[in-house]
Amino acid sequence: MTSYFLHKSRAIKKVCPVCQRPFTWRKKWEKDWEQVFYCSERCRRGKENKS
Image: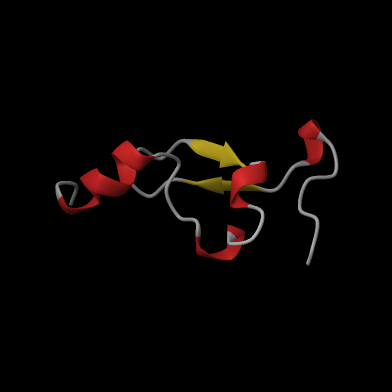
């Protein structure tokens, strides 16, 4: 298992495709960080409404 979190300032970041905001690695995503695409449940549910 790869540790993605080194330090808060150097944490791996992704950009949410719905709201275009950057978000960083979180402990709860440790096992499936590669499959995380959305910053929140709200963005994940709203992905169909956005073009």
